[in-house]
Image (cartoon, rainbow, N blue to C red):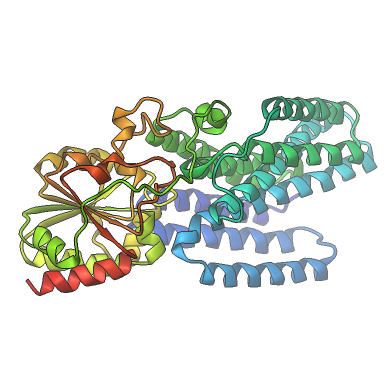
Length: 462
């Protein structure tokens, strides 16, 4: 029986998690919300040591110390561009931990031979946690490998993949039923292995820009696994925390799928019929209009209205501070400048907002797609920095294109477009961007930070 003081402490931790989630809904309160959530997690861990008779204390403390060192060093060294990979990695570890805990609890259930309705529900929750936690772990590891480019970002398909996936899913359901009917560690272990295979098969066909949506889906899976694990352990706090993660992850998955203009089913299995966001692509050799910093500075310096479209290339080059300086100089000249933020700019929702907040860009200048799309027709110059697919007109004009139907920023409606790119290689969708060949478009090739530095100097010299 959990002591009353521990239950009250867990309640306080649960409130911290809820307040943290609310704080994360706005960039202005996100830092405070994150700290509150971390405080709640620390409180829950401390209470656990004093509320229970903890065995193997030395091993547990050693594991915590090692995990703390890895977490701190990893978080300090990770680049902002690698944040989605870190999220995938941490999410997978959470799902794997839930599955391992469920296996240990299954061993306890088998050892004590519990019967009755409560044991039946506990076994159902255990089977669910093992299966879903394993799927989340292996699937998250594949998303990490794709984003880190340890493997191809293109969909990986092969003949018989749908049959193999369907068979693995059916095997997972059957093994779960067998586990509930006759609990045994061997059955639980096989179920875990099937879940691992299922997670890999789920993510392999997903490519390119669709990977962040899958990260969000797997995050929801981890939350549900943790919530079920909380029931197995009789821990209400885990139940609350897992439910929060599961619900928010599910909601975010839907929002991201809507932002990409495709259903979740198409995102996961579109590659099997050639409809997934592919990634890769060949470098185009079609002629384009390009210019140097001085010519582009004239376009910007004599404009009245400028919209900046930041993308993943800006993040890779770590050019947010230089971009902020350029925008400040333009603002001092009386030019109205805003940032147009696509829902999936960068590689995850909020990724670009965090990157620009790091450069202390005023939040009022960050405008979401729905807010700013009507302004492009009255805009003199659109400056696209490292973005591609989010301004590709093929999403509106080319049925059958991988991104067809995806809502985009209407950069093509502006009077002039300046495109900053490293090369003519396509974006994650793996298709050419016809906007690059528009007569209104001028390209400036090179690393985003170098190009922006030259452009900043040229604008100051006007």
